[in-house]
Image (tube, one colour):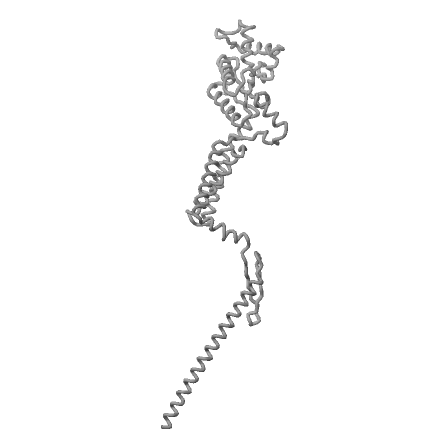
Length: 362
C-alpha cells in the first residue's frame, strides 16, 4: 500500500513540474513577443526620424558583439513619386495609350511630308535677322528679277585643242553653242560666241576664201584672217576667249578656246543643280568631236548640294547599322533590336521632316 502511494506522489509531482514548465514557457513567449514588438516599433520610429527625403542615410548599429553593421534607408523623391503615382498609371490607361499612338502617327505623317518637300542648300538670307533692312532689300530684288549677281551666273564651255579650220569642227562648235544658249536656265542675249562672230566676219570680208557651204577651211588662210579679226578693235574682246600658240614650224594654232554664256535665275539651290545637269546633258547630246567641258563658279556649290542627300543617307545607314549591332550584342534579342532600330529610324525621320516645317534647308 505504501508503494502505491509513493508512485502516485511521484506522478503528481511530474504533472506539477510539467504545468509549471508550460506556464513558464507561455510567460516567456509573451514577454518575447512584447519585447520584439516594442523593439520593432522603436526601430520604425528611429528609421522614420533618420530618413531624409531624396538622400541616402547610412547608420552604424552595434550588433551586440562589438561589430558595427550598416543600416541604409531611402525615401522616394518627388520625381520618383510622380513616375510611380502619376506617369506609370497614366501610361497604363487605355485612353492614354490611344492618345499617344495617335500623336506619334501624326508626328510621323507630318515628318514624312516634310522629308518629301525638303529643299537642299543654304540661302544667305537665312543668315540675316528678320528686322534687318538688307533682308527686305534682297527679297524685293529677287521678287522683281533685279538682282544681277543672284540671277545671272557666268559659265563657259571649254574646248580643247582641235582642228578649228575644218568645216566639221566649226559646224559642231557653232551648233553646240546655239543649243546651249537656247536651253533652259540660259540667257541667249548675253552669250559671247567668238567662232560664230568670226564666221560672220570672214564670210563678209573674205568671201572669196570660203567654200560652197560658207566655211573657211584652208589652214593658213584661216589663222591669217583670225589674227586680223582679233587685231580689229571691234573684235579684240574675243582675244580673251582664245589661247593661241605656235607649232614647231612657226604656224599659229588654237590650243584652247571657250564660249561664254550666262545661267539665268539660278539663285535657288535646286535650280543650280538642274542648270548644271542640263548643261552637261546638252553637251553630251550635241558633241561628237569637240567634247567641251562646261564650267561655272556655281558648279562647286551645285556639286556639293547634289551629293548631300546621298551622303546623308549613307551616314544614316552606317549609324543605324552600328546601333543594330550594338543592340544585338547587349540585348541579345531580335525583337528588342528591331524595336530599337525602328525607334532610331522614327527619330531620324522626325528630325529631317521638321527641318522643312521649321522653314530650314538641308
